[in-house]
Length: 95
Image (cartoon, rainbow, N blue to C red; front, side, top):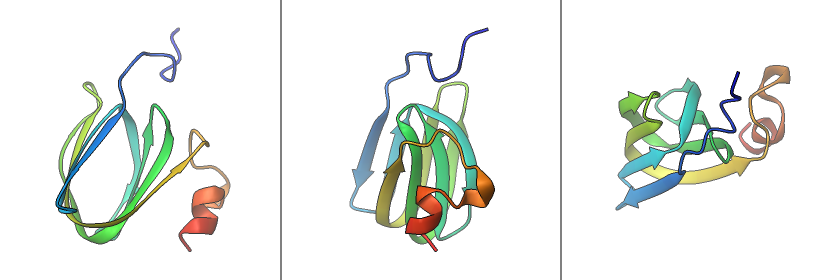
């Protein structure tokens, strides 16, 4: 069995005018609402914070995610998944 973190997928993040974001290398979306999206990428957890955030397209087979809304913050964590109720690094950063 191949670990999903060992599959070579390029992780790339492109932001256009802080209103549109395209991300590759996405493994899973852990949680989302209109102010925060937390997802697993090939490079660890990524938290996206902003206003009126919407997932426009999600294709986990291709590892692609498209987000629209006002993007205000991005934060990576080396943790591979949310554990202990999300109170790891991201839990402390985004209370």
